Amino acid sequence: MLKCLLWVGVLLLPQLTMGQPVGDPVAGRAAFAPCVRCHAVGPAARHGFGPHLNQLQGRRAGSLGDYAYSEALRKSGLVWDAATLHKYIKDPSGTVPGTKMRFMGFGYDERKIADLLAYLQRQQGPVP
Image (tube, rainbow, N blue to C red; front, side):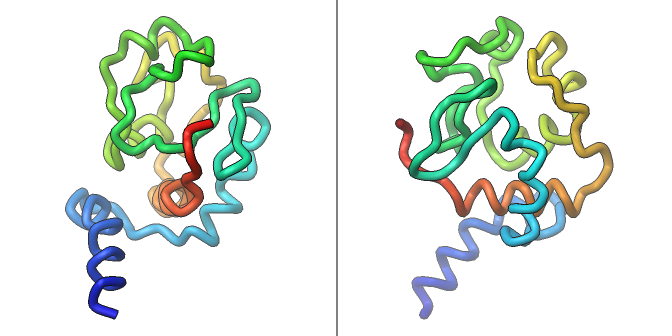
């Protein structure tokens, strides 16, 4: 039980320290609905119009060699963590001008962003 609580604490600490709400992965599944047009996540995920979203945490943006990222994202220097993903999901073009991701972002809906991040964290599959 203690081990489980420590693991939950490790997953939630970045959100708690950023002052962001703690996300609900069940609600995050619904928040992910507009993303499935281009992205996949989980054990069977493959690239679509956008890259798969497996193993994002700690990965350099634009670094999967088998996906054609925009030059802007490849050269952004971003490393995906909770804060960076939050900022990018909130406003992709404002975070990386020139990105080819055509999503307007979730704007100021902090709850929806937190839920989406919780869902992505839970769904992480291997890098195909």
